[in-house]
Length: 524
Image 1: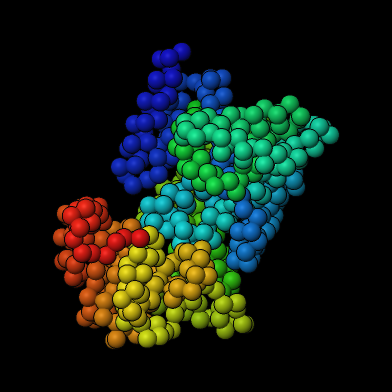
Image 2: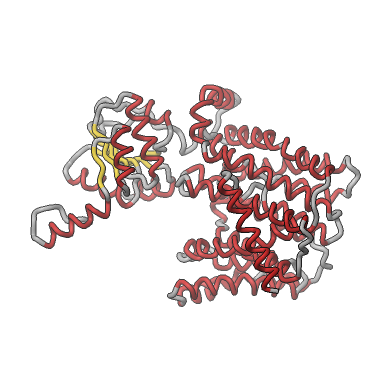
């Protein structure tokens, strides 16, 4: 048995490595590995199915950990995410209905095609350092809304007969205080990881016992733990573990059967509809009051088919609502969408800069349709009397801001994280919204009186982009930033940064000065 497991894992690794080196998501390689193994006569097994089920339960558990009712009720989340689901479900459902299938099957299948890939979107946002940005938070909230709808669809797609014992799952979130205490009691990281894993499997087992899909039980267990201070830490640790188990799910799809020409053509047809989904997202974001840049970058992050489409389709196949051939069709469509959209997401900022004149026209037309709500991504029109700017109000940026304030300098902070801005404004700090990689921000700000700009941004690409845009705009003042490697310092200097410091090196210098009793400002 060990031999066949080694074949599964080894083939998945090699195919995933090849896909990654070709700039595709590894998921595409895992699916291809399943097809390759099937072509060589390798079959699936109960062990692989069991591992795939665990992966799905962990996925739903981590989704439950992220559910925040307040974030789901935001105007742009409901208007964009909700309307997109309704429109795509309606159009797709009608199209499938014309093919002669049952109405409920058409609606479920149509809705599953409205979901976007959580794995790809979060990976792209994380790589770009945009998870906490305004558009990053909107994208994640829309993904969570889609995931919640997916759970409802799974309930309808499940072939289990309804049992009144299912209502026993509803009080699970009410056990939150005890679950939070147990999580707080676990001080070691490995204990928290085991607790999360145990909760996910327990939720699945309890749900299965009362006649409900195990996936829904795992989701409810995640909701029970949500809002705890350690939730993000637990979710990050479970994320990689969940990815390992989900490899079995994608292998299982590929091992089921090779796609025939008809399935391949149908998948290509579904891929041809992706640009229409993108146009719909873009239009809805503009009508919700977002700028064209925010709408474009958010659209690219959402313009894929989701892993949940595979999960929902697989559930309907098991319930005999769909023929098994649908698994291969949807799998090809999902993998193809990830392969096509991943390169676009990596270059989203460059693509917007190239097509900005065209995309900005649509923003103006959307504004002419009526009075749209003001949104936090509106560009600032003035910086007041500020003579010093600090871009990025994290720990480093805030320290620089306070140091300048104590010297009675006219300083203004900028950040693209709405929660950071809200917190700092509550503390009476002078801060405004600003994205360092937004060309319109730097070209529109009156920088004539600004003596210096500090770029306290953790992402190297964002620092480079900001320096490049500032010098291109003709800014002659000082630009200071941070660097972590010698090659970063060299490149930032070539782009026009006046001085760069290594935070850890400066921490050592400050410690030495303090211990020798030399005069210097004590860090806070």
